Length: 365
Image (cartoon, rainbow, N blue to C red; front, side, top):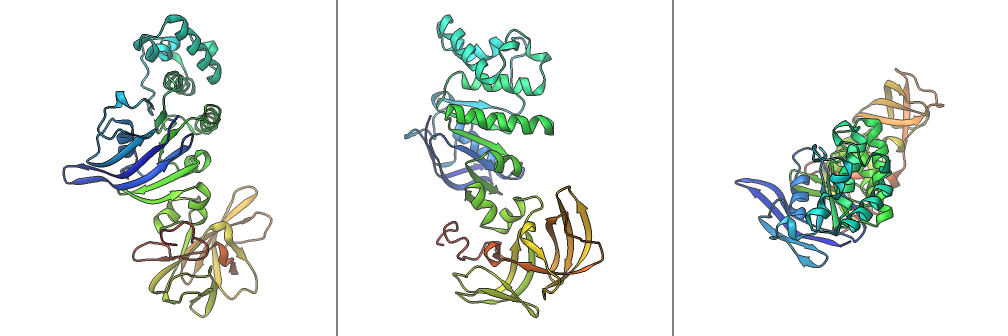
């Protein structure tokens, strides 16, 4: 397996810039997620790493070798697509063995490799079946088998679970992660599903309009979003934004919102203008005597928890609380916030203000 280093990668299609000056490192053996909405540049980035698209500028290093202008056949990677891309006229065994046969590997070695891969994937009992009659989950396992049978330097996966229903997707996500851990593989995985990225990834790049909004661990991206886009894209429900205007100084521990002071992490920069007080739904607490007030618009019961839609003077927000806590639509409630879980944003640029919370995550923090 191999480390992959991306430096100032850029891709233009005529006047359209699909990927803008992206730089990041994928560690050897890492499960690395490229996450973002449709059209954000994640698949184009993956295709450039794989050699299916050549970059307009920038460098791609795989295992220390610069491969940016080399074709896919010279990069020793394996690609897994959303639509499986299996050969319909071949059975499972022949689909998996095809890459080895095309390389001229001896038959005995091919049989041994196919048997090993089929054991890993749990598909020994379907090796002689035609692929056309298989379930979506089994077809995806066959596609994975054809990819891993070569033992490549890295795996490229473009929304491989996108064609499966919700139940199969969850099961296959667990299997993919377990397979990755057994093989200690370097895997680059494209998805638009933030839950999938958070569940499976060691590191995540969040992209938007061809730009990397944030790069880090799932926990850092969830707890310490670098931009309002990341805060809104990650989480279900996403982060809330209480909008206000004012002035904050370096070292501030609170912000003034109307007649109430709300806590924030110790700020490492001053700001004057339009801001957003970013707080996750699970970090909002109800308190009868709290001075910051809201009215409950709706209550959504989810078993052990409930989601409250709250109307405040600074906009509508959602809170996740225990189902055991009484809450009724139409009630007036007080809200409290833990300043150590709050992120302040510049509403015009969308960027997070630097604080003790995110000092190790944001640039120049």
